[in-house]
Image 1 (cartoon, rainbow, N blue to C red):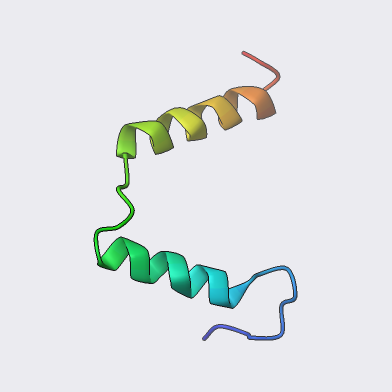
Image 2: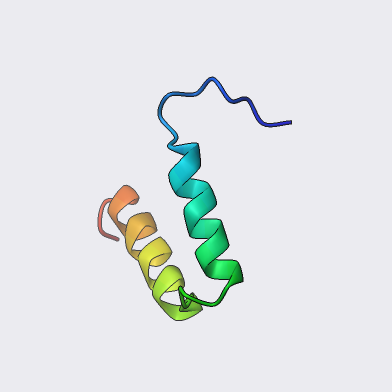
Length: 48
């Protein structure tokens, strides 16, 4: 169950992005996502 009272999330924008993905207007590149996650982990780990 998702709470709708969270002001930090623009639910209209989220829905717009979901729609664009489902229609193929936005291409997802898994390798870029993985690279970003790894970079974040390195940063959190002190650059190790």
